[in-house]
Image 1 (tube, helix red, strand yellow):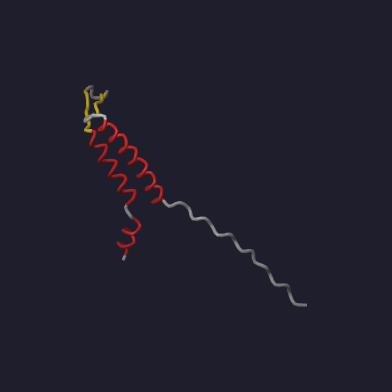
Image 2 (spheres, helix red, strand yellow):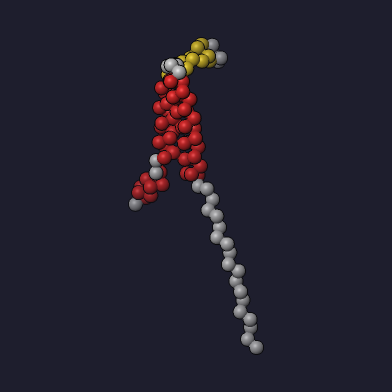
Length: 92
């Protein structure tokens, strides 16, 4: 008698782990949207400066509200930019 053929089990396809680049993009877009939304909301209410108090120095501080809008746009652009394409082109 001939030996029986062995049946190999086909392994199910493995799920690809979420890359660090994808996590960076999600966080950048989320934080950028929050910063942009808060800055835009403050500007539409007529607040041109965010005033605060620095307890360590003991003085008042102020930040232009437009800066929050710009930070938001930069973070959203960093999240949308095709970094993988740029990294692949750089390796050539």
